[in-house]
Length: 113
Image (cartoon, rainbow, N blue to C red; front, side):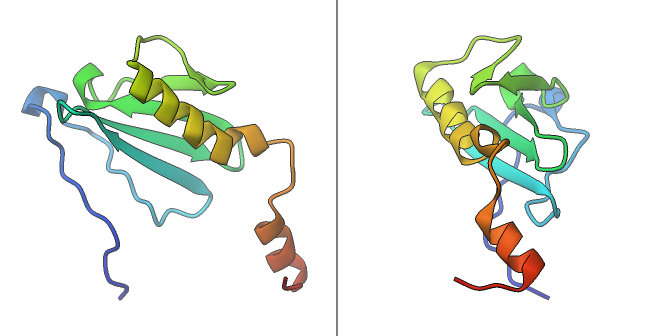
């Protein structure tokens, strides 16, 4: 079994407890984590197959799912730092939706760089 690379617990009240656990080893998904200066946490989830990006935030209730469209979160207000983090996650994933992912293409045909 592989050693854990990263682990984090819920820093919010039990009322904000997530009903979903986030698994960074899940195939086909990208996860990003953010914690601000107040300890408020957020998780960015990008599904490579559907091209859909979402953000869940502990202070908004982990079960509230906010779509990310063109690098911007819908349905809630975020701080400048949170907006920059979301944008960075989007640039690493959603912004590339229409472009081929070279490492995936290379693995598929057996080519190496």
